Image (tube, rainbow, N blue to C red):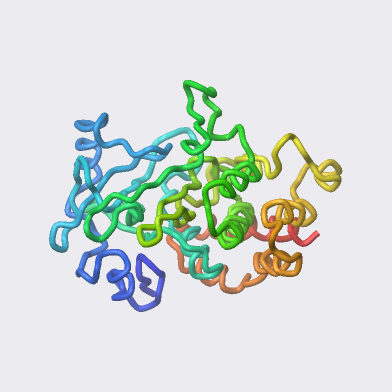
Length: 326
């Protein structure tokens, strides 16, 4: 069976029309790049100081020239993320992992995500592509800052772990300061934290949450979600979350008893983050994370992960789901 490399819809050998509209403005862009991985690596080497986009994975800018995607030094409208190199497990499947994690977020849980798809180099190697949400259709760069920048945290000032020495509650506190429509955005943030936990994303750190300025009204909002993947496929035994849930070293009695986050932790976290929301509304959001197991399995089965990792992926979700029920 053939699946669209974007949304995983059945019956397609390349991108479906909906994905072409979403990613490429309706242009007939193919799922194979007009250059190979060695070509990419050489270009990356030649321009390594100019082309870096912050993050651990190798990333490169692309722009659309007619219906062809091309490498560029600046002003790109797409980010290409090939298979990374490093000491971790199953790295050849990182693009497929990020793709399915982002698709589940948007298709199952209605989380606003950066548009994305699987794409291939001309020599057949898989990569992940995402459309930049900080560039408007007319090329205008939108004002965007991640929470490491907002909190004024950096490696020279705060050490190598500056992205991790914080909490999700701290992010919410800064959101209250900068976001006028905080109650609405707080719900989105709460849901995103829950989702990262559900799929075992142990690398959702400060730089993976951002705000951007709404062009129409001039206020700040959460950006679409990005850089989501199940890190347990690559780093077994990694911590459950990149950041602590609570600030100030606070822990619930349930966490003290088992050293794992459970429903009590997420319920109390919700009360702190969404103090203007009724407990019933918060419970509804939490319960949504425990549903749709069949939809998740259907998407994972269609994904570009190998069968053995599909099982690991689904098993890890089941473990987290059980914790979130307690």
